Picture 1 (tube, rainbow, N blue to C red):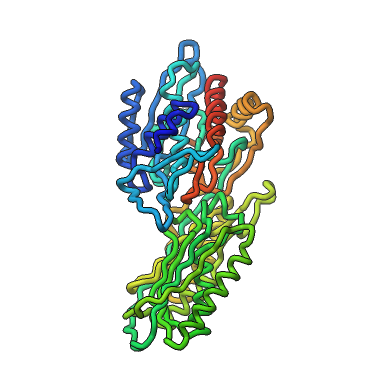
Picture 2 (cartoon, one colour):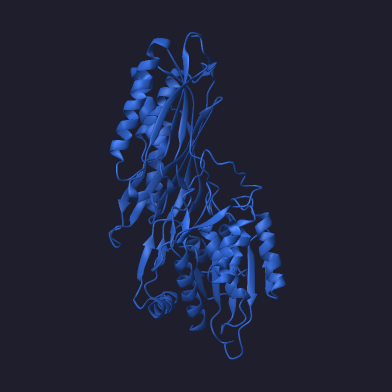
Length: 484
């Protein structure tokens, strides 16, 4: 049961995290959690504000003698990525998250856990609720809709924040400090087509399902070489259509713009005398994918099951063009940062691909530390799909967060890390997007650093947070606040 996490330490942090698991809060559905945060601020006797989109700010007065300290702003986002396994029955709009302890970790049954960024929210609330701390003036900012377009951060207005130092609590690698991050842009592809009648009633239907991939966060885990379900399905379909004469009725894969897609499916119409050959080919490609991703993925499943032949089909030329564009388009890391070895500079993730009922929707999330390279990658994707007659739109573009080597916030956290861990943390730039760059646009003089507990496999149903890491990270946060 989820309540078992209430006995973990620090109890105040886990209490708040448990309460967050009980509130459905997928991106674009944050009304309830925004209200919870607003009411909790009032209950704690804090100065409490909420803007027109639902961002919440709580402010806490300094202890006597600490009034002249710079105000610290803790920041986290209140929404979570709603991902579940295909065999999991869960409604993210109504059902609580079923969190449980698994050895040294807390995870969830069949769904994302929401530690990204619920654990950051819980830590900030625990600090605001603790009247034993020797703190200067404090502020906690909780933003909406970070996971899709960073809508909350983009809606911030000058004057909503008063802090001087911002501690972003949305990082997922314990022991590292982050002082910069990539920007991003959505590339959205649409196409309309007229479905054709299937004029071959003797054909058989084959439902092809690809599953078993790890997926993950397209910023944090894009460099790990994991399979992209949409790319692998397109590769398979290209051969199925051209070698075996199959006709495509439908394809869909992925459902979150910032998650590497784990599953995809397609519906084919196949001549009766080709069905067994195509089934054999499917088995061969399953073996091929398992071999190619050995040591990276688990047990990849690619299966073709006979179903009634589809009545409607995608026109052959359009189907071939779409599959070819998907197979050939850019995906994964495109360049690496020279100043931070091992860190991706630019990448793209083929997040969502849906062809059915006369409509095509394909979505990419392009990330880059360089605005010019970001738009170059986006333009390359645009060219690939304009060539097949699709419409392409760029949305939700945001700039990265540029590192400040003279950051006082970084120095403060380095000192606190050394006290808690006995060693100096690394100061890094991450490829994932954080709200810091956008907030810096509103508060250009605000000094920032990002850190957090160890979270594995965010944006996937395998998401988990390390229990002792939470305790250590909270100690760092408290030490920094008390020793500014």
